[in-house]
Amino acid sequence: MMVFWALVALVVGVIVAVGLARLLGRSERAVSGSHNPQALSVVGSALLSSFILVTAFLIASTWSTYNTDRQHTYDEARSVTTTYWLAGKLPPADRDKVRAGLTVYASQVVADDWPAMGRHQTSEEAATTLDGLRVEVGAIHPASAADEKSRADVSAALDDIYSKRLIRAADVNYSMPSLLYFALVVAALLLVAYPPLVGLTANGRNVVVLSGLGAMVGLGILIVIGLSHPYSEPLAIAPTAFRHALEQFTQING
Image (tube, rainbow, N blue to C red; front, side, top):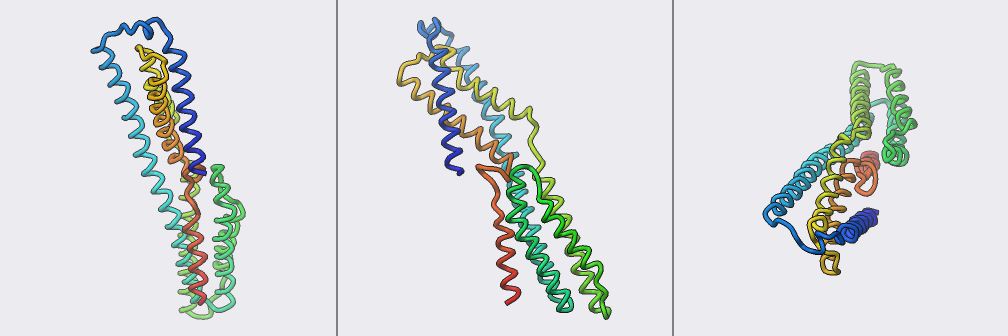
């Protein structure tokens, strides 16, 4: 899927570049080649610097956010695994009920939450399962002080899962200011349109070179958009952390 979207971005960039070259490269100035080299050099450098500045800022910002969001999924899955282990100290009936609920929750996160997060939502079923677990643990009546300590530990661990789930839900709805995307698109269009505007003729060799520029610009825009939506294609974060947690449940049981 990631390769598909990369190819789409490259093709779109090429089409835009070729279209601008064919449209703007037939002007009288382009055909005659009359221009001021010093002025064109300054303007061209400014346009390139603007595009690099905006792209570098957006990639750095979105990459940092992307890694943070991915780390949040591992933090939550680690809390789920810890809670599963702590539930082993409860009386057998309560232990089995809590562990079964945690298994259902982790499975729902993988099967329901992740597709929903691609649409900037979260699964109501998974949230309901977690809330039900918290209620069940709160209703346990320990027979001794030691059992109460175990119940309190599990309850605190479930609260920790709940807090980290809220963080993940907030990550899903975060987005970069739209003005930054607008600036990126404008800088990209000006950068690709500049050569034919100032005299690059629309012959085959020049069109090929400009096509390469358009392809790289399109790919840069795709990277920015993909990183800014970490749970959507083409760079979607996978539910690896929760799949690993389900594997650890089996190991703990063993």
